[in-house]
Image (cartoon, rainbow, N blue to C red; front, side, top):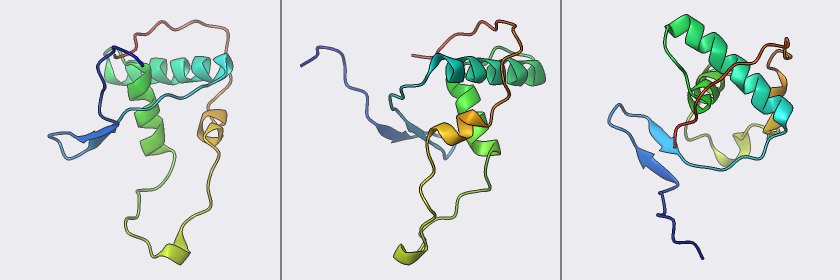
Length: 102
């Protein structure tokens, strides 16, 4: 049992999106690739970008828009959670510092 405050797993945001809280275990190489993605996104937007923003951006840009309420027989095949991270470019040897939102 923990004394830490419990955060709801999912809640609606005022802009119409939903925020989902989860814990993901990744190899350090994947974390580094996400850091590179955050660096590229920060360069495009001209502001600091957190790793969770980079992940959200990658998820939105890596596949077409979601289709909702598919009939039971038409669900797409499951995709490994590492598949989208594996498609990120390899590390070029530069370090990118960032902050994680808590």
